[in-house]
Image (tube, rainbow, N blue to C red; front, side, top):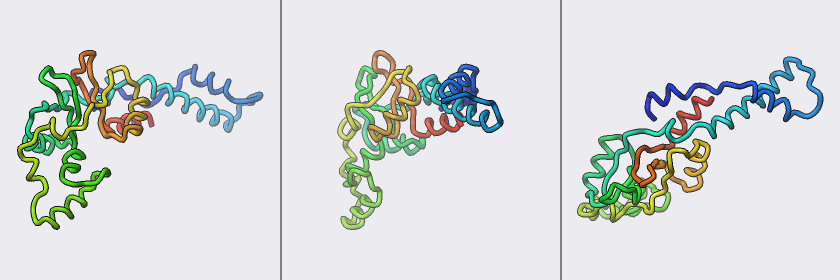
Length: 201
């Protein structure tokens, strides 16, 4: 998430509309007491947060620029890039710059014999049993050989609520954001979502 976007993620402000909607949703006559007001505030705040979950879009929280690799990029280069940038995955693009897949630590671990959960310790165990590096056979492979495809991506107008639901449903850690021609223009990670939710408080 860009720092400029963080500044835009102000705490949720409760509008008069939120308060009125909250009061209308409460059954019966409301005699305003401190307890009643706290209840109105609680309901209004929940409504405001729900509104913000819809109002905030990918463009408000996505990270740019996007670290990308092409289908022909060798795995040594990719592993080095991910390590140097401190990221765990990146979109994979075709020769026209369109997203065709995603490559991540999970893909590397799977190729090295990890189970579906991507257990690093499973790889360690294999290395110890085989008395060697189980990554060596991948030395001459490329992103296109091991990437996860097709890529799960979204447009800039997807809400943060829908992003959160998509990451959970698909069990993925990042969502590339693409333009109308499927070119990656940003990426939203679970960390970006956590930061956004913290700002929504």
